[in-house]
Amino acid sequence: MFKYFFAITLSLLSASFIQAQNSFARTVKEYYRVNPFRGNFSSFVEALTTDPALLKKEIHHQTDTTGYFVRGQYDVFNPYSINANKVDMLFYENAYKSKSRVFFTFYTYQLTAYFPDTELARRAIVKDYKKLVKKIRKDFYDTQRQSLKGYNNIEDGEITAFNDSGSPLEPAVVSWQTLAKTKQLGLTIILRLEQVNNYAYPVNYRRLNYIR
Image (tube, rainbow, N blue to C red; front, top):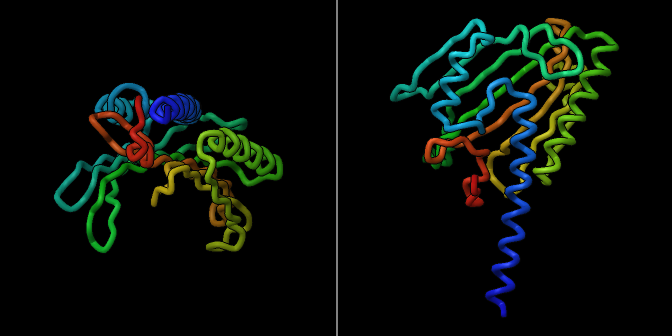
């Protein structure tokens, strides 16, 4: 009896988990021009680095001491409610370490959009930020929110990190902040990804035996 109950429970949890991942993948597709979850990892990296809309590209290949690194800028891509001045893209390889021991490598995939710091733009950006937080929160129930006011001379802003498995790394982070030096607003999305069997996964899903 227990065996059948366990099997049914596991099946329900797996179905719920896959549905949540599909929801998260839809959110990523909406906000990232090049979707890391479409196709295999090699195809994603090729699409990212050869995208004609990505300007001012800077690419550094992996060496014995440094990880893979890509930087670029979008002038026309903008998934937000108001037009951004520009959108910076960063994609780079990291190593998760503890006491100088490397446990696993992962990739950070970051977008930062810049807007003029006006009252109208600030209201729109805060609204976009809250909308994005709400979308991701559906899939990652463990959220940590913190004000950025006063941090490194930031006048106003907020950051939310998302997790759901007790992972030492949050798979998603979203923030908005004022940028006093340039008199702009910044809206940032960060994904942390692992490559498993040539496919990209959020960092903690590997440990949950995610089924693509």
